[in-house]
Image (cartoon, rainbow, N blue to C red; front, top):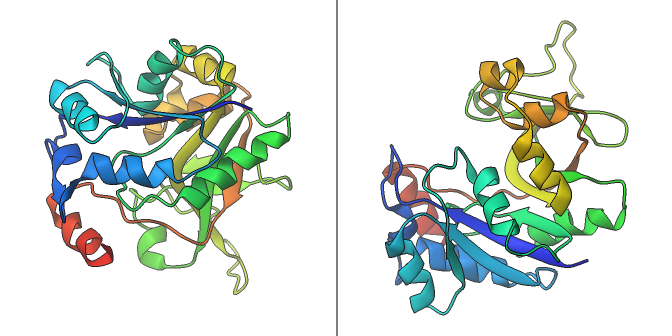
Length: 239
């Protein structure tokens, strides 16, 4: 399998403009993400997909590879698909979050490895949790899966609902890292939006609605992301 790693990185952000370029103890955030992903031996080519020349120039400065993409993409999935169009000989695309400077290459490898099963179309990560604060937080996405660990549904609500309380059930929370078969990435980007997707504001519900299987790979580790200036301190402590 030939694997294309793509790091979508926008300059504009309502909560933290320019965050890919912030300094994290001597390196920009985009450099730390790039170098972390580069540790994966399963990724054959790694590209930053950006819409801003400042990010493009920063990636070139530290010796990485970057590509300018449209400013009109609604999300990172769509931005990845634009890059893929220039690399038709790759079998798998992995969408790496550009705001996770502590990205763990072992998680990238675990997603890529599931594609040894040719029936896999899309793969993502999930982590077990029973922390009430996380389960009730609508920004923490929850998942339920079937007997083969394929996603049945994603929700901002706490799912499943506990009509009968259980002391043993372990809830599953989503970690937003995705890998796709190349042709499947293009397919899902061409699907029209669905009502469920609009209600929950979760694009993966469009994929499920159109009968795409999403394999959920369990992990016991989650790297902190930087979504707002308030998140900086926790990342700096890890560094």
